[in-house]
Length: 149
Image 1 (spheres, rainbow, N blue to C red):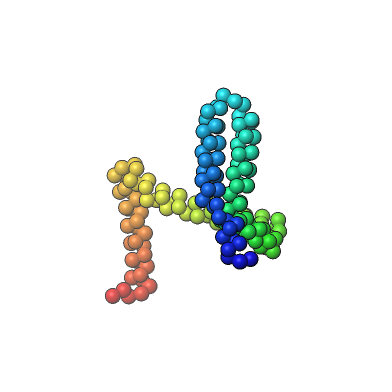
Image 2 (image 1 turned 90 degrees about the horizontal axis):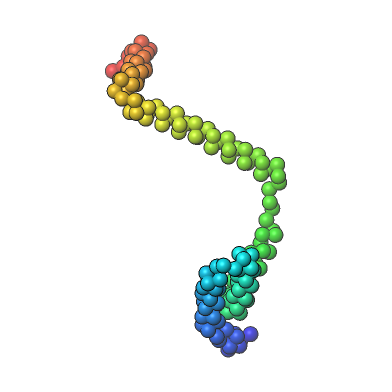
């Protein structure tokens, strides 16, 4: 097609988008105005308004482009090789297992750091004693095994 024909086809795009804006605004206003009506009927009216709005929007240049994009995406989705149920289950179990391990590491680390702070100086002193003993054992082993200079 020539550019003049395409320009003529989408000539009233601004007016169409304005119409879409007013239809959506009117639908929102009508939904709140008729709040006493049964929700099922309001939902059905909302679906009809949405369908009409989408129909008007698809008549614009951007709407035609979006529709073309959706069709191309559908073709590409059909080309995808989806995992089997067994592969999906195995991958899910691996992810859950890793999450459980990481949660346990974070909880243990959090308790080691925070519990002495929560329970006051006596437990901090106990916590420091444990750390000092661990370092003294490491230092003693270092002296016995290797000359540390």
